[in-house]
Structure formats: structure tokens, C-alpha cells
Image 1 (cartoon, helix red, strand yellow):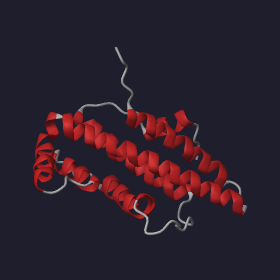
Image 2 (tube, helix red, strand yellow):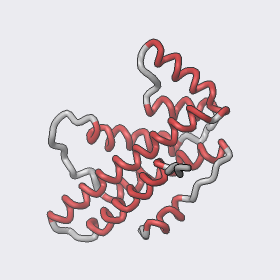
Image 3 (spheres, one colour):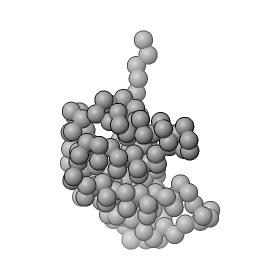
Image 4 (cartoon, helix red, strand yellow):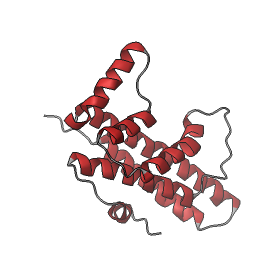
Length: 172
């Protein structure tokens, strides 16, 4: 029997490793370290975002409490495309009547400002000035709390952000 791998947790772990690298680069103030910090942040964002997509897609597809969102997704897919990443999260929160949306909203803002320019670039070149450890760490933390709250409502376990940081060796 083949053992499945939890892609979301694997990618979160790898994102965390890049975040640790970004932290170490952020401690140096030379130009090379600044560029390496940005590169590590970009890698962390890409991996973490993919884990967020794996989580919401899995839950919408399989969890009975999100059947309404799944039905809406399937209906949209028949006629147009499907629910966007943002709308899946928003609709999941609405369906579950999660009114604590601060982390979700903060993550979706981060997604728009940090992830979108990376995965849907308007050019081969982007400014790396905003891709700093602190901003990316805060964004990923909001994402972590976003799916931690979702998991809590769906009756699933997830380590806390502090435990995650301890596991990856990140002490800020």
C-alpha cells in the first residue's frame, strides 16, 4: 500500500525553512544578504501559498460542512471557471459562519500584494524591496492562523504558529 504524503504540511515545512534562511539573511546588512533575503522570502511565499491552496481545495472537496461551497464551485465550473483562491476562503468562512476574519483578510491582502506579483508578473523583473523577512513572516503567520481557525471549526488538529516556528528553528 502506498503511503500518501500531506502536501500542505510538506510545503509549509519547506516554506518555513526558507523563512528561517530569510531571517538569517536579514541579520546582515550588506547588499548580497538583502538580495538573498528577498529570494528566500519569495520561495517561502510560493511554497506556503501552495499549501494554502491544497488545504482549501481538500476541505471544500471533502468536508461535509463545506458542501455548499463545493456545490457553488462545481456550478461555476460548469458555466465559467471556478471559485478563485480568495473566494474559496471567503465562502468557506461565510458557510461556516466564521466571523473572526481579521487573519483571513490580512492574509488575502498579503496574497494580493506579495504573491500575485510573483506568480502573475507583469515583467520578468520585480522590485525585491518589500520582500523582507518581517513582512513575509507576518503574512505567513496570518495565513497559518487562517487555516488554524478553519481546522478548529472542521474538527481538525494543527500545531500552533509558535510550535511551527519552534519545529523549523525560527526564533524571532
